[in-house]
Length: 129
Image 1 (cartoon, helix red, strand yellow):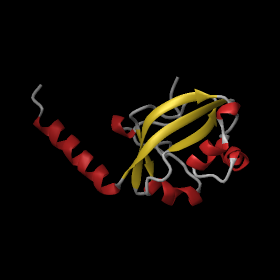
Image 2: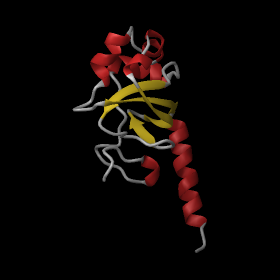
Image 3: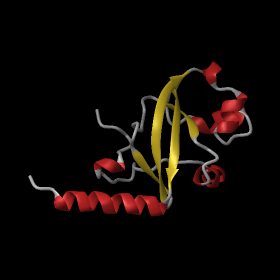
Image 4: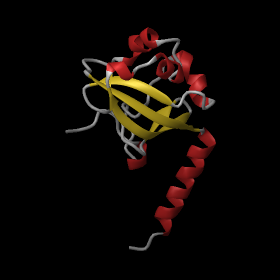
């Protein structure tokens, strides 16, 4: 089974390597005000520790948890950047999804992304096998 989203840390880049957020949420994600998202998928599309592009920076996934509809509270909706549960549910479903996932993450700024890649390249070039 091939995942729909590929982890950038595995050096696989494709059209599926983005973590998509509604335009109105992106600034809150960049500022660190939004650190979780609720997604309704058939299966997880991200992995813990994986990094996914978001415009100029990246999102690094800290945890993924399967939850139920009763777990989607007004507080969780606000924490995810929405006005309320109905606002969140309008956007949370992706395709024919049936399982609800709570994904916690943090934003990695473009400067930190660049620094990480520089260290990774340096490490690869100094290895002796």
